[in-house]
Image (cartoon, rainbow, N blue to C red; front, side, top):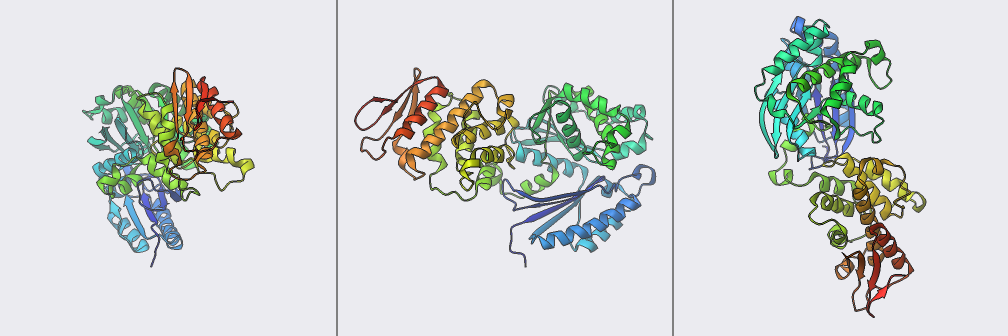
Length: 496
């Protein structure tokens, strides 16, 4: 019997079948394996009312492969969901029966409103502050659901996925635009999206986001939480839907089957933007699968901060017993007052501050920086990633003016980069003073007052000064543009 905590989710969509294996079903589960197959189950369903025969054969064959993989990977639980094509097709029930025979497990056919709910939960699991409308675009349908203050509101499933539109509009863009517009106009609550954010879920929109990143020379190639002004995205998507199909197919990062649906995915967003006028489009890598895991958690666990949970998952075992709470108390006086966002990022930096202890010292800065910048972190936007990466790089000895690349300078304001740098140097100082031992920093403090940075040490001589301490406090003072002093056992001594 399997003894691991690994959990797998198989998502049988209208266009693709995907297997994702997670390390566990915790608040911030790490993805261990992710495989997608473009089966095209829903191709032609508008005309025939049935699943595509070739797509059906491909799906069944790959389900057999997925079963073998989950067994080889010692997965303890596998959840299987089927969406629009399977629930709408005449032969959907027979396909489900065949899939269940192959897998030896039940296949859950999700109703449209439940698909919307799970997709929105997935977004909220990764972006708890989401405020606007979640749109999950599959091959056969578009699920829309209003989210506000962590709660789910009105929702609807519309049969306007790219595969369905290709058939219904007979590849006529003009006709397709009319069908999409009519469907969206029937959503009475959609005008509430005006001025709020639109959270885009689904493979076609993620592919478009990747193309937009390349076109705009965006520095960080991470789709999740990529945010673009909605009008900018609409303009780019308009060019895509007018682009020659052969041009799209020639792109090495776009499969042939995905290339056929991309113009329709772009057109759907264009029509939505024209009707609802959202402020920004934010792409989410978390959707139905992550929502299904999140939905199973205890409410108390769901309420925890996903960033802190993912930091703890990422770090694993530390070499020191020094608690992040001690580091946070030591560093916090350097932060702007009443800035909850920077305080939260600083707490995350404290949790990640020993992440590279196993790396070779000559490569530690670069490896720590890259690991944090590109990690499977959730509950954080791109600027937040840049803040953490810069802070951890300086914690390991980098200079603010010589980071491994310019991403922090591009994504952060000068003030945010200054704070990240100060946090990093202060963390380095904290480890130097404490040696990573717990309790030492409880008797040491930093304070900034009237452009004077003070390091206060205990009067019992338990923390001893040295040249390295003087160098670190001077470096910190330079970042803060403050004079420095150290208050040791023997009285006030200016820093060297």
